[in-house]
Amino acid sequence: MKKNIHPKYYEDAVVMCACGNRFTVGSTKKEIRVEICSKCHPFFTGEMKFVDTEGRIEKFMKKYADYYKQQNQTQEKNK
Image (tube, rainbow, N blue to C red):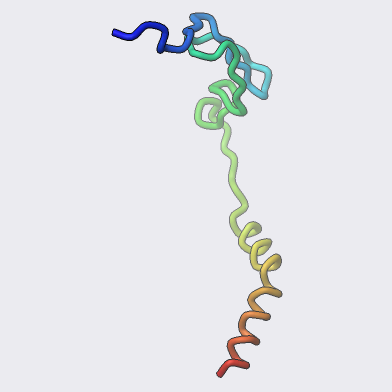
């Protein structure tokens, strides 16, 4: 079997969340940064967060309205 092909394994790697929570795990990296952990994720905290899908669609349509108008005009000219 080949020697020295596996990365170094850290038993006490620190995971740091954006919310400030820290805990240790085993990993091949000494330090891991995450945006969401079990202390701040809505599934684990029980907090419900709704996403405004209607607002997102309206924002998209507003952003690309000029593009669609221009595309329709070029198609009408080609007919």
